Image (cartoon, protein in one colour):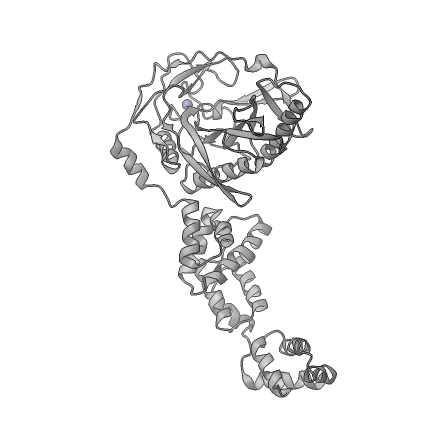
Length: 475
Ligand SMILES: [Zn+2]
């Protein structure tokens, strides 16, 4: 693909986590019976008037603040006219001429390279109803109609499918951290129109743009872009021409297909929404909202490296999920061994959660208990295999690690007399191996340590066992 350079831009629609819909008091995002959370405003009955949802505005402004946008102290709503069954008013209330947030940027990392992706703007709008096409009929659920959406539009700054996914991942992390949206892709909380073009390398002018509509999985976006960029480059290589068009991704076939051009040849006849006043904010309100912002993932990542001395890799894994990062930090605050806490969280804890399909909120092992478990290992009260057994009990039932160690008799044998005894038995039963060790074969010692562990039923302190064996074998 090195003969052609790709440019990718994204239009990301995000469902905002608000209690009510964008312009009425109907509950938003309730998983209930279809067409039950509706009222005259959101199904567009004549004469019904919209009232703006302040919380939606607040959440969208916060996104702008997180990515360094200029916040418009005065923004406007517009009507975007179109006729389709999912939009009973026959227009969508959105922002076209004067959006809420202008500019901004998101830092991404892809293939070990850091890059800044510029954002053109973020605007506020309402969602359409959910339409499901069946074989001969279509079904519409108006529960989603007029729920609050923000749309973030990037510049075409991404140059590979990996960068597009890195952007979406970084954005998703931020939105979850700040409580803007749950970003559950399966529930359609984040949907994406993907614009792409290619241009011959060595040239600056962007190529002809194709838009793939309504993508809602990261995997699908990656595959669609791989296909689409290659299709465009191959068309040009063969001397063909590209037309600006809207395409759709056929996930099963793994190809993009042009949509009937009439379907998207809209003239939306935008005009200012006469039923809503402009959104007027004052600087103090915006600053108060800024003060509510949480520590962002990238900042937290850097702080974990600095404050806890963690490798970048650990910090990345731990902060990818806000709840996990908070769990780690709660445990680390009770511990002296941050790296060990990190290992337990990244290893046993994430594995156990994955096996059960649970989130950290469901885990019975408290951060304090994990820190105490780490301390028991560090004090050599228990060895690692025993610690993993204790972890499993804590994960399933909670409790105090020291009590579990006692109850299960897992404490390591660190008593010199007992270990000496096991060492003598091990040597007596394995004279040949003992002779090899005396003869200089260092690896033979490990075998004997293993025998001591066996004799102690896993409870001997392996370091003390090795010391005892060395002593008895005259080294
Ligand atoms: Zn309503």
